[in-house]
Length: 412
Image (cartoon, rainbow, N blue to C red; front, side, top):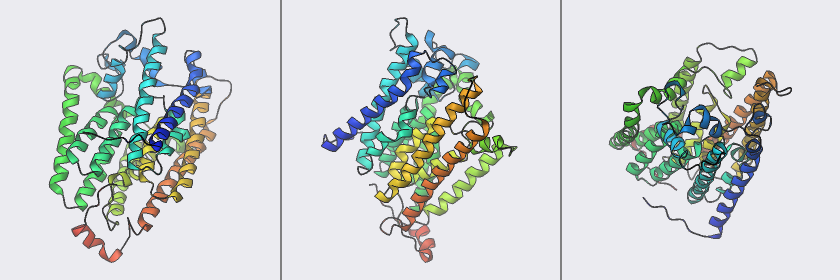
């Protein structure tokens, strides 16, 4: 598996912009480093990070294995848990273990960001710079370990669109074993294979993904099953939470019971709409072309929509963009994300005991603004794809023929 990077002026600029993004994010979070992540200060200054918080709360400061603590095990898939544990051994024991642990992980996250931006530069050179300068990405970069799963997801998309399906399936399994979000992409992958009448390839891709994911998870499941299950149990049992449309509606007095059923129904509706959308293309779209549309829509109707989830959406958004006319919609979406980023932390500051902050109603409105701007950007990309005669022309009288005899177009 080899990806060549040309050291052109554009590449150097992308590296420089990525480093600048890392520095700006580091400056934003540095206030909390200096105050030792005290509460409610972390919320007031919007510099909370799970990295130092879980270092002590999950006994990582004593180098305990991430999944050996029962109810105190980490609430993440196994590769993230392994990274959380492994980086404890890279942190010098100098009396500032928490700070050193944060610095080590922040450094690795910046490296991952640089490689992600360079990869996007290979896939969408015209818009790759937007990844590094996206304000919501800069604001959320060090909240969690998401970049580890993002880079493998983008690589999986890259190789899928290059028609190297086995490599893509392995990378997809690694990404799912890191942060689980990419499991959503199996739906458009299946639909693309189906549209191309490649049922055997769809089965093979799914099988490779499952087997690799199982091989990664098996050692943890067999040795510490309770710790392994904690991530899945929490997500199955959780109610409507921060950032979700359901939680915002409840704050506005619109209480909805059986949120799990609504979430499942929403996912089913999204799946049907995605299938109709894909089969409306004259030419089979690439995975990169539809990934953002699916993931953003699912997050908008999921049970939780944390601020750092934007890290997943920004690279996918760039991959989904085709024309310069999409850029204004991108910035409108980023504006909604920034509004929400400020709102969530000021609301949490009030909840955690600060003398000032954002009340329930204002926070709910900020949540709905975020969701509305996200769906607006999704709608722009959908309309652009369907209206572009070179990539996604609609011909209603040929939809059935396209379903039966559609041809594939490889990325890029």
